[in-house]
Each structure stands twice: as structure tokens, then as C-alpha cells.
Amino acid sequence: MACRAQTLSVLATVRQREGRFDDAIALCRRVIADTEHGADADPGLAASLAHAWFILDWALYDAGRPEEATHSRGALAIYERLADLDRQAAVLNNLGAYAFHEGRWHDAVVLYRRAGNASARAGDAVTAAFGDCNVGEVLVGQGRLAIAEQVLRQARQVWRGTGYDSGVAFVTALLGRAAVHGGRVEEGHGMLQTALGKYRRLRHAAEAEWAEALLAEALAFGGHAERALQSIEALRVRLLDPRLEPLLERMRGCALAQLGETEGARSALERACARARELGVLYDVAAGLDALDAFTGGDDDGRRRRRDALLHQLGVVALPVPPLTGPAPTAARAPTPAD
Image 1: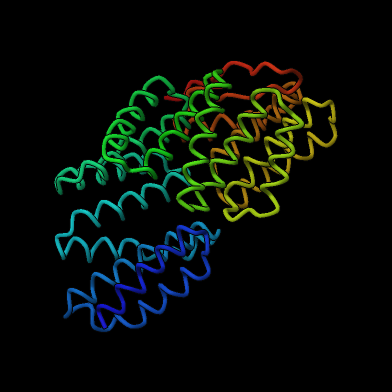
Image 2: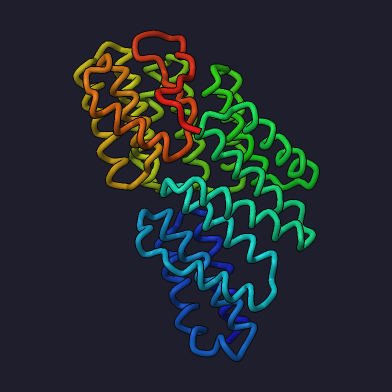
């Protein structure tokens, strides 16, 4: 039973990586049904149960069902009982990612650092680098680009030296986004293309579409409106992760604004804000409100107050905005002091 459960949970991991979330969820539930009653007495069953809980939450999040993802704390408790530092780090990393997507960025950094420490104690430098990489992702979102790039390069050095291609793709994409947000659009675009190629070779579907969404953002920041719209439309018809919808719709609005289609641009920016609120993606709510503010010339004090409150909550110090009328990206700006 333990061998069967372990095999099914590994298969669930493969399905999750391929973006086949429903298959991953179904496999995890089979493992849970087979193991949860004997897990207290059998360490093998306990490990399989913990892994199934871990993958189940990951698949539920990626499938746009975060309210159902309530199993990771139980997985962490089992791994702590089994003294499995490596798996503790994996769960803590994902818990950090969930906190990040929910706008609890302070909690995310704490969880990411706990994960990195657990991996370091286990002697696993490759996984420990995720602590740096994931904290770097938060720093990019906060607009602390110089320190973000420093932290991300540290992770990339470890992963390049150990041949961890998935990690290299992840950190390269984040460095690309940091470059785009810092005004180095062509450099960032090249890094994002490299990351996307790696993800496609690895058949990591969800991560590949994330890189594609960042490429669409880079095109909008570069003022390539027609190409940005083509990229966005191609991705939207096969989108796996609904959390990317606000970013894509916001970039669609910016691209339409660059083409002078004011009504379509405003509608797209408003839809981006609404969808971000539905999904609870606070950064995208704030970024959408900021883009609307720039587009309308700051005609709504209430909108700016809502934006500034969210940026303060997230610790954002500078928020970049793609051009709404021309090809050159605007400089990152800080709508409110938020430290």
C-alpha cells in the first residue's frame, strides 16, 4: 500500500507540472483515501499522505480554487514528526507562495526564509536557494529592484552550478521582469525568452504560461502594442492559471491605450481591477488602479486612496507603469511612501 501510494503521489506531481490539474487532484485524493487511516502507525503511509496533501494544495491553487487548499499545514506537521527537513522546506516554500499570492507579503518572506533555513540544515544548497529566489520575487513586486537582482543572482549562481534547469528558468524570468520594471526592456525581454524556452523544454506548462504573461508585459512596457495584443490573445485562449488574468487584461488595456483606443483601454483596465479583486490578487488590484489613475489623469481621489492603502500593505515603494501613449516606458514611481 505504501509503495502504491508513493507511486501515485509522484504521478500526481508529474500531472501538476504538466498543468493537468484535475488529474493531479484526482490522484491526490486517491492517495489520501488510501493512507489517511493508517498514517499514524506507518511512516511510509504518513509520508505518502503528506506528499499528497502538499501536491493537492498546489494543484488547487493553480486551478484557481485556493479556498479548498487547506492541507499543507497538515503535511508540514507530518514532515516535522518524521524529521524530514527537505520536505518541510518544500511545504514552507509553497505556503510562502500562497501567502505571496494572497497579498500577505510579510508572511511570505518569513515562510520563504524558514524554508531556506530548513534546506540549509538538510545540506541541500539547491533547494535552499529557493529562499533567496522567492524573497527576490517579493522584492521585485515591491519595486526594490537593486537588492532583488542581487538576491536573485545568488540563487542563479547556485542553480547554474548544480544544473538545476527549472530553478535557472525561474530566476531568469524574475531577473527579466526586474529588468523590464527598471526600464531595461530589451534586456528583460531576452531573459524572459530564455526562461520560456527552458520551461517548454522541461514541459512545465503552468510556469511556461507565467513566463509568456511576463513576455506580454515586457512587450507592453516596450511600447510594442500590436505584438503585446497578439501575445495576450494567444495566451488567453489556453490559459491554465486564472491568477494571470488581471495582468494580461491590464497589459491589454495599456496596449490599447498606446494605439489610441481609449474606450477599449479604459474598459480593459477596469476589467483587470475587477478580476483582480475577484481573485484576491492585491498587487494586481493596486497596479490596475494605478494604471487607471495614470490613464484618466488622476480624476478619482478615492481610487488613489485605495491604491495607496494596498501598496502600503504590500510594502511597495515603486510601481512601474508601461507607457499609455508612447513607446518609451515611464520610470518607476512611488505613489505613496510605503516602507
